[in-house]
Image 1 (tube, one colour):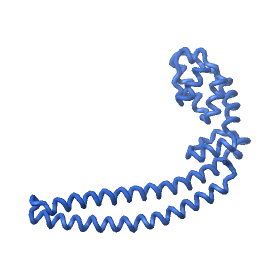
Image 2: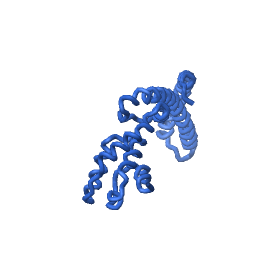
Image 3: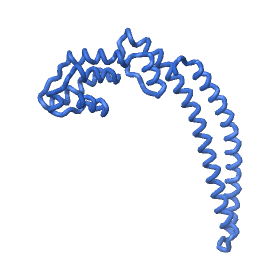
Image 4: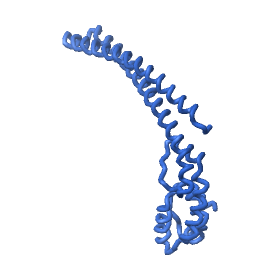
Length: 200
């Protein structure tokens, strides 16, 4: 049981000779089903054990996987997977898939709304960081501008660069204002979806 649990946690079908010989194929199937693994995992396990001359008990594995899928293919599990941005591999049997997808789509809707908020929030943070870097550059250029080492040509170039950076600094300020307005709208949309979902 410990060996099979370790395999499940690693998300890997690599099996040693001893694991292949002593494997409880029903338990392995159950754990793979409960983790939402596709039936292709049996093929990976078969290939791994073939290297050791061991043939898996496919019937026991499939029976265990069917039982495991009953644990996986629930409405709440679907919601949690969708909410986390996880993908669905179409593993649920027809009689369980409908209720799973109800939860999954609700979770995905909330995930997408949250991602939309995060995208704008990250863009605002990046813009603020760029403005700070611009101010640092302007300070450095201004110091060089008034130094004795700067030539006339360098001063002309520095003045042009400082003017350009100041313009960009102002533009970023306007962009941040627009993005902050967009952030308010996206946060409102997120809270609307959040209030609508029956899952907590």
